[in-house]
Image (cartoon, rainbow, N blue to C red; front, side, top):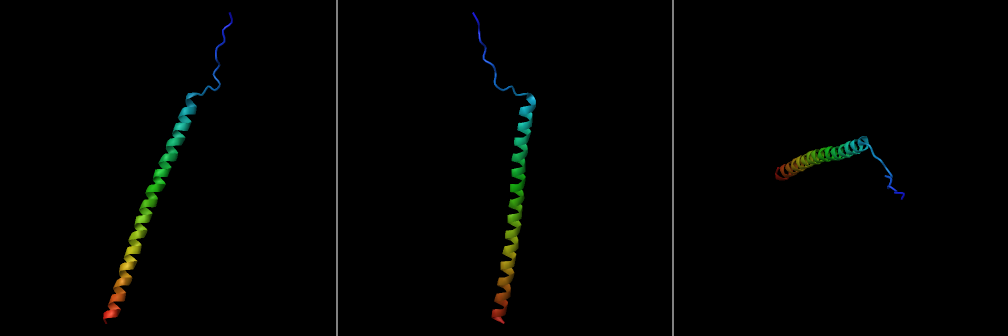
Length: 66
């Protein structure tokens, strides 16, 4: 009687899993880094816009009362 064993189609080495694991982690960490930088940038822009609005409001009110 002849027995047939199922052959594995793809044999992946340990390096394959290490490479894709490191690549996945680096992409996720890059996205977190860019997202946190964007949040800091947006907050600083909002502070600048709020300061400009307050300054313009002060000048307008001073001229009106004098």
